[in-house]
Length: 114
Length: 115
Image 1 (cartoon, rainbow over the protein chains, first blue to last red):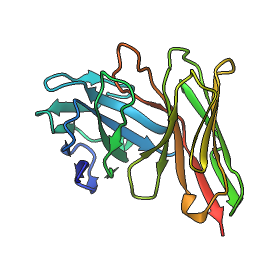
Image 2 (tube, rainbow over the protein chains, first blue to last red):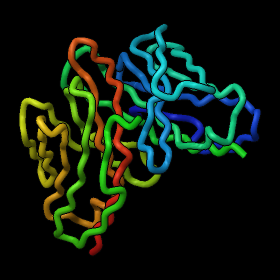
Image 3 (tube, each protein chain N blue to C red):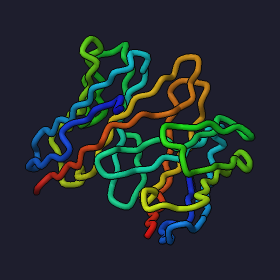
């Protein structure tokens, strides 16, 4: 079982460059999420999508855009990368609207902006 | 504003010891409290979770203790093993009728279990 797959695993960008982080899940989950992980700050929610065609801001959305392409795929775009966006990015998916469900995370994308 | 505060930041114990990681939350609307385990280079994975209608939950060597009045919960690892060395995150969310699955994470605790 693939679960949640993120690409790329590593990326180095120059300040001002743009890129898209890709995420796909094969568990038929309705909800998908993008988190960033920074030392001493845990994981913070950037954006989430409760269903295909809907997206909502999380705690730290500035500088990012997202697209829920279909039920399986949820991408995160940095239009003009800044050093403050150096982080490890995690995509997650989950079935919501019912109790006792679990969020599954991808293996992460380590992004460095120089 | 950190809605879920986790301590300690790091912890070193000997094999067989009982590390304890503590979390405190502010929002009384939280009704689901999971703990995630993360190994280097991997994504977090659900370890154990609790809801505020119970004060304790055990799964194998892992136990969550929950104190609703104090708005605190903690993870205990019994008979810790070197393989338990990882980063642990507590989290909180609101399930209820508007369940979005959004998780608020604590800052994380890096645990090292020495052989």
